[in-house]
Amino acid sequence: MDLFLPARQPFLLSSVIRSHGWCELAPFNSQEPYDRLEYVLELDGGSVVAISLQEAPGGISVTLDGSLTAEEQSELADKVAWMLGLDMDFTWFYEHAKDEPKLASAARQARGRILRSATVFEDVVRTILTTNTTWSGTKRMVKALVELYGRAVEGNAEKIAFPTALHLAKADVETLRKDGKLGYRAPYVLELAQRSSSEELDLEALKENSLPVDEVRRRLLALKGVGPYAAANLLMLLGHYGAIPVDSWALKMVSQEFYSGVPVGRKEVESSFERWGEWQGLAFWLWDWS
DNA sequence: GGTAGACCTGGACGC
DNA sequence: GCGTCCAGGTCTACC
Image (cartoon, rainbow, N blue to C red; front, top):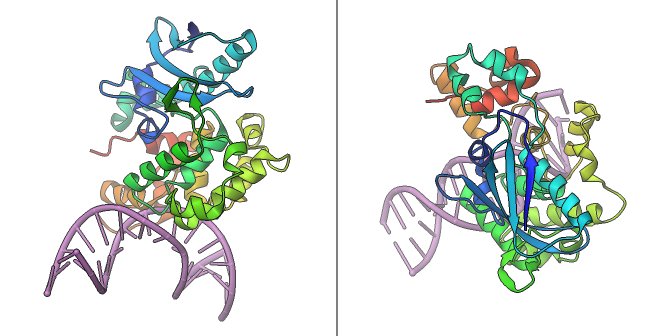
């Protein structure tokens, strides 16, 4: 079956897919020229569906095998709209970016939307797995989690969804540590899953844009395994572009770009993009470092 | 509030 | 092939 979802213009699916490395992490899949995005997700009712997203005039077409109930279609539409930020508005940013040569491509290529997972829980886990490791390590850990704890599409064992908090909460820390290769991150991910699957922690509430950004940051920093870098990264994913995810790469790039190679710290990174105010994280993200 | 050391793994490097 | 060192953020204990 097919669904059509409208997108606020300008919109380019390939720009969302290329926005960061999530498209390389299971269960996402996309190849050059990044005009199609595949993903597997588990719906609230337990159905696991493999979807394929392609750009269509004015929006996105969602294709999947089989059929869904009206309720499932509605949930799927909401989740895809969230993942791609279909309703996001970048008018202010594009208007100001057009005068900055290092950001000139932003409006032209409709850049700004950052690819999200279907749930905040999934994005928090992924982000924790990007910390203190290499990108190849992150890919390995995410793949292991999906294969160990994710549920597959009925009749297609190769299409596996990212494990829900409920499934992951049943894991044991030693299996996560050894088989999942999560190392010291294992207890962080397990605690997150256990709290998320109970009434104790409602990560999905962070999608509400009525929450003050400082409150969102405070809640993120309260999670074990989430420090300043991970919180800033998650704030960007949640649509709050006022924080810069300062990691070793950011320090290096800002040092070369603005300080002639002199080593810099967090303050220098932030002051370099201060003039972009609540969009400074996005200005940093889209900056043409070449 | 700031800092040092531990956490864990893979990759680079030297032998 | 083996051992050593280092990079990558966050947590905890300590000052």
